[in-house]
Image 1 (cartoon, rainbow, N blue to C red):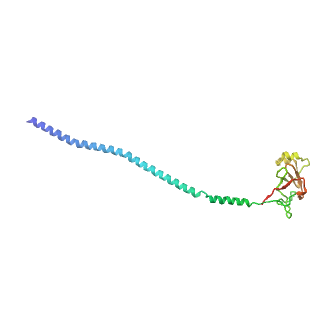
Image 2 (image 1 turned 180 degrees about the vertical axis):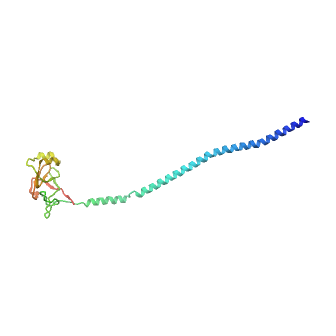
Image 3 (image 1 turned 30 degrees about the vertical axis):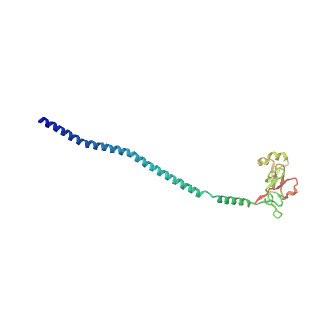
Length: 206
């Protein structure tokens, strides 16, 4: 009888102890599963947050680029403005008038230079030779030495420093020269009276 009672108690104890341990084990397993699920969810959530941040950065960069393009378009000159400025520059250039001496004069350093007319007898300072096509060089208060020759001017024109080797001081005189001719003037002289000089007025800017 005692043996039967012990066996019955053992069966009851085994049954109830196993049943009570199962919920605890299940709770532990459920908690472990929740932790694993939370861990598996957290990377996805962080990735989603990072993706949102990247998308926001891309949108901000795109907006800044659009604003920059708008500013460039506002600051960019239009075709009409370019045409107006070009026409204005051409009109200003066309308004520059060049005048030619009516009467071409040579003269000494005391005579003023400028556009020569019948009323305003000025010495032309824009002379050009039609023979050698050189612009005429002039030296105030200087005269050419008598030893000057064609080869000297041919080899040294238009180097003014080398030309000075044949210049002499002469108060009130003015020495003229191109590559093929030379002349010293003191008084006002009409160029037409110097037939050997092939010089003309090269026009003056006004």
